[in-house]
Image (cartoon, rainbow, N blue to C red):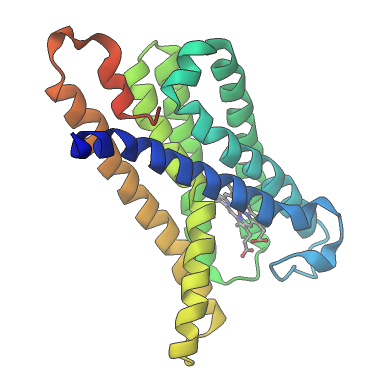
Length: 232
Ligand code: HEM
């Protein structure tokens, strides 16, 4: 009985943790770019490119919005009760990602973080946009199941903004133990790790939560299996 209750609560706990991390990082990371004060930038700006700071602002604001909207889009309860809100928030999420991706491509090009990190950002941006397009195409065709799969993949990439910062903290702590590690090593590794770990986590979630649960679902259980992908 207790095990069953724990199993039922686990997705809700995961969803709460994910939401808290998403909102926390969105507020913490984006807030310095709301002031217009270039000296508050957390990354070194390219002094040869006047638009570098502006590109970070245009990237970070919609990026933060997408990060916050995402978890609520996965809530079965919210979707069932407010389908129109799901559609509107979905459009805002999409436009945010298109804007954030365009600005990210520019920011990555003029970044001073070095080629290995720039390549990680290009890859992330391409996968971000591709998974969004696939998710959109699926829902336009009325294929809800495929839409969910692609949107899980897409949000896992949005969530790379959280993972990157968590890995950075871990890397900076590791630097204490391994002083030969440079900040660039930590930054580049964190950028690549965020892409890789989040993509693998998304595929694990899709296979073990969505596909396996649906296959096990009795034919008479209606839409209940849909909750496997979502939290509430
Ligand atoms: C998932 C796709 C994303 C890509 C490809 C991407 C790409 C980039 C790039 C290239 C930079 C400049 C980094 C540098 O020059 O070293 C950057 C910085 C930044 N990004 Fe993103 N980003 C993504 C998602 C997000 C999201 C969802 C947020 C929301 C919080 C976000 C917030 C920021 C912020 C605040 C900065 C400025 C650096 C800092 O203060 O930490 N990004 N991003």
